Amino acid sequence: MKITAKCYYALIASVELAGSYGKGPVRAARIAEIHGIPVRFLELILNDLKSAEIVESKRGVDGGFSLKSLPADIRVYDIFKAIDGELIMIDCEKVSAGECMLKEYMHGLRAVIYDYLHNTTLAELAESCRNGGNGLNYVI
Image 1 (cartoon, rainbow, N blue to C red):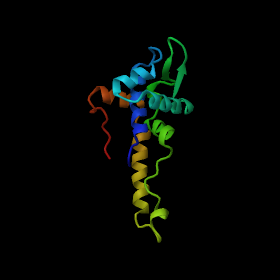
Image 2 (spheres, rainbow, N blue to C red; image 1 turned 30 degrees about the horizontal axis):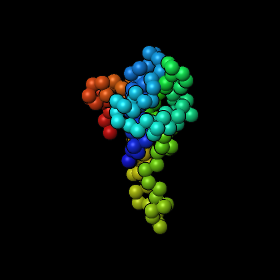
Image 3 (cartoon, one colour; image 1 turned 90 degrees about the vertical axis):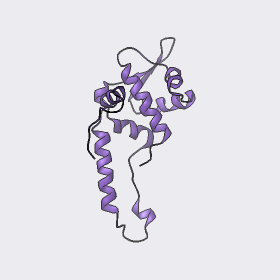
């Protein structure tokens, strides 16, 4: 599975918004500056997250983006889905003329990845980032 830059930046922005939850909106330009993300690209990403009802925005001097729900109520899978759509590992019918001998394996792999993303909340991801990446203890 390859994570797109768009999804990677969405995760970074979501973690930043989780860290600011309840403290008011955060400007996209601030997140972009901290992480070296092109601001216009980040604004598009945040608007995708807004369309998925993960974030909300406020205009004006005190404006910016904030999470619409508690970080503990947002699944990392929801962010992936909002940005990249459903998880598809490999479409056997497109790469194999006959029966796909890896079909069951690929379905199992997709299920493990889906479970990992679906069972990790944004709050857990943010905590893991604060702990240097050592906070998620799932076994795959």
